[in-house]
Amino acid sequence: MNLARFQELAQRYAKLRIAIIGDFCLDRYFEIDPTRQEISLETGLPVHNVIRVRCQPGAGGTILNNLCALNVGRVFPVGVSGTDGEGYELRTVLAMRPGVSLDFFVTTETRNTFTYSKPLVMHPGQPPEELSRLDLKNWTPTPAPLQRTLADAVTQIAPQVDAVILLDQVDIADTGVISAVVLEAVATAVTTFPNLVVLADSRRSLRGYPQVGFKMNRAEMARTAGIPENASFELIKNAAEAIATAQNNPVFITLAEHGLIGAAPQQPANHVKALPLRGEIDIVGAGDSVMANLSVALASGATVQEAMELAALASSIVVHQLGTTGTATMEDILTLGQSSGMITSAG
Image (cartoon, rainbow, N blue to C red):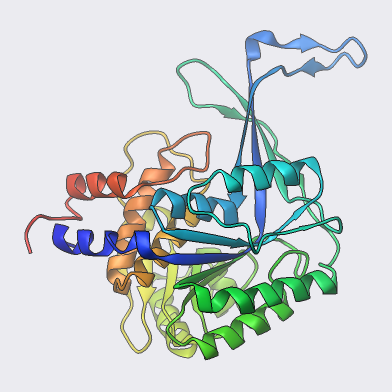
């Protein structure tokens, strides 16, 4: 990609309106000072003294963070929080992000706020040491009235946006935001608004989704396409081409250190290599940065190849941000793109 094309795409970002429909969580980081460790008088167990607590949106919120970092004009989270303290924190950090509207973000007493609590032991001059995470989830099906409310939100938001991102983060079907009822509303929306860019990601499987674009990692691709997880590049490319044609939408597969494969309908799949590592890495949030950058680029008129190049640059930036689910700005992407040779001055 040359600089003129990068600038042409980038200048469109501020005019975009994008909805994120799916599971939002609160990421809470507890920074622990090991020099202040005590022993509990009651239990005799070590006490970890927390010197700082950081809260930020996670799951769909990580995608939202990336959209905001890219200076997207308006972002609409369509999701759920509880009436608990975690829900208050989540809504607060979402509202602090520039350009974010909570008009379609539902608060309900019937669900816990999806929360990841992440203890980090802070050692001077070293990356944080991660201890076992504490998760707060929902283990029962999403109530039918709430599913209907979310489906209605999809119907209302579809004509107002340029792109929709679908994120199914839960491990047990129908316990999160994405349900059969919500997907029916998405199917109606893409039929009614054929130019709407829709890209979906599910940690379980994208089988049964309406005709939308897919973003998958290698394991998710294996489950969706019914191929081995250790399938060759050629087999993955063939599967991507077949799914893209069947979905009539782009399909992307992230391959960690091996980069990305992407295919447009009726077109051969392309491969973009990952950039070399430049130090310690933390892969948390890398897939969400890819999802955000693919969606924004496609909504701005980028080709599949161009979208993958921008996503590869963004993910390379994010994995080098330690102890957080990071983001990449357009300035970051341009700087790395030019230094790596992926963005050139020549036409």
